[in-house]
Length: 302
Ligand code: AMP
Ligand code: ZN
Image (cartoon, rainbow, N blue to C red):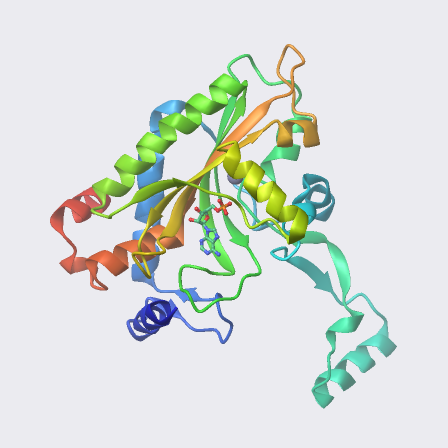
């Protein structure tokens, strides 16, 4: 963690990230955003010939859809809900009193119909289900969203609000697995073209609690999740910059997404952690983009 904290301080000093007083919640400089947007555009170039439908959702989603998605069963510790003041004038006076006294003023807040998006693909599935059965060759989507995860940390690569670019494939198991294979290769080529060291490994999500341990080992045993890792803070514990997730029929069943023949659709997604890839570039090539190696510059600015 020492290395991570040092890197975070360097990023603050260089003005690339801007402190807010909350760990994992940062402003970004123009230079940081420029690199991030170029990484995003690079992912677009790699997927350009696939005919993905582009959709953009705000960084929040319907609480009802979130409840249905099963997220709270697996990751209650990461979820972020939006609460608001819904009281009358007396409640308002009490709120101000608490605020003035430095007491907890949040107990009167009430849950709204909105929660923060935990992964870019979550708002997609209910939308897809509403459209009815998928065509025979399935569907492919291009998504990007700020995502929230309650995991405050001094590691700059572990933010509470960060952007996830995704391609999501829905179709038969064969179509969906072929998509994941293609992106495992493309993701590797993309990150290598940026001059970054990488490894690819089987992975599991941080499922909550004792039951979560069983879910995590099931996910690993079935090879459902792979990650492309780049050392950012330490060589021993490289950071997941891309994830390749096969959900089997989890979302298909949850949302009633069907193929034309009535079979439940399978889904998979590839997720690019845009801040993490950007941070990996600054870590390996230095904080001054003008001084980056020519091949990496050519790929991003060429
Ligand atoms: P996941 O849904 O956990 O597989 O996340 C997809 C991608 O988002 C990961 O491969 C990371 O690159 C990125 N990511 C996940 N959590 C964070 C975080 N706390 N801060 C920054 N990026 C993250
Ligand atoms: Zn996803």
